[in-house]
Length: 116
Image (tube, rainbow, N blue to C red; front, side, top):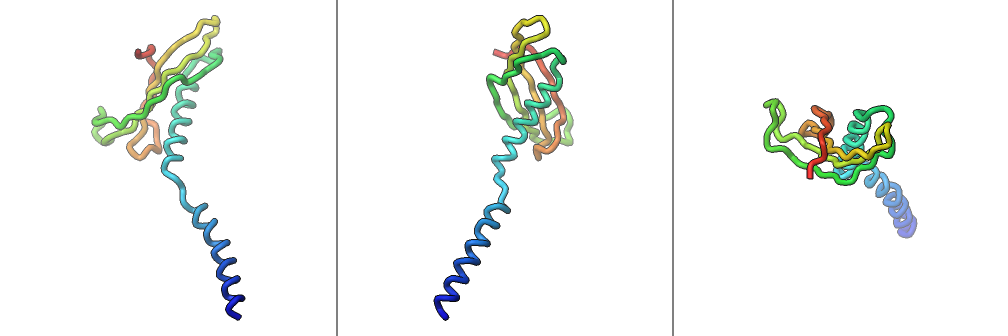
């Protein structure tokens, strides 16, 4: 009878442990999702004929202040990227995507010449 309860406990732990692990979402995955979203946002701003888009540098910063006082410490992603334009010329640009402090919404996107 004691061995039956031991086996039962093992099966219960075998079922509960994976459920607990699956229920925990890592916050580092949120950063990955934002990075992908920032890349997609910049890519969507390029001309239709742009080809060979490639991010060559990526940086995440928490801004100390923002022009809209309702957002304290928004998160800015800066991407240095290259692409080929419709004439075949290689373009090197920098894009900034600013997220709300909770990282769920984009509040600004811009593309500038490449910062060195």
